[in-house]
Length: 193
Image (tube, rainbow, N blue to C red; front, side, top):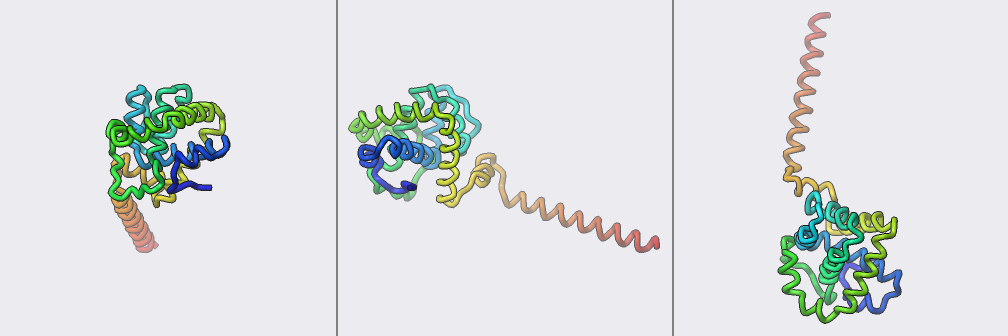
């Protein structure tokens, strides 16, 4: 079951261990999409290298550091802030929110749910050590990007600074040149015969 808009803490407290693991993977995936700059800030603070702030690059960086408890704890905090009360609509949402600003606005929530944060961090660390975790997280990131009307190729174009309309223009120009060369060759060979 996909948990799009829900109260993450209430569900976490009532779920079985397997359901908690699924919830944590889903919320982590959403955090890479909803708060990419905050996640990147955590990686910077933990001196973890990442390629870009595309969700897939952030997830790969997080996956490859399963033993960094400080990083996991901070990512879990961000993850719970995605659906902290179940009524977030993310209207006028700023994906460039820093980790500091996110924690400033969510500190009361995080402090009031310290036990859940600690349990979620430990569950996430154990889950990350599982070989299938990487596949599950990658699948969830792709799934939520598709729900949001985005895909990784689109994010890649935006992240790398490539304008998709320029690609189409160059492809059209290339096709025109090929057609022109084909007509020229055909006419040249027709005159020869």
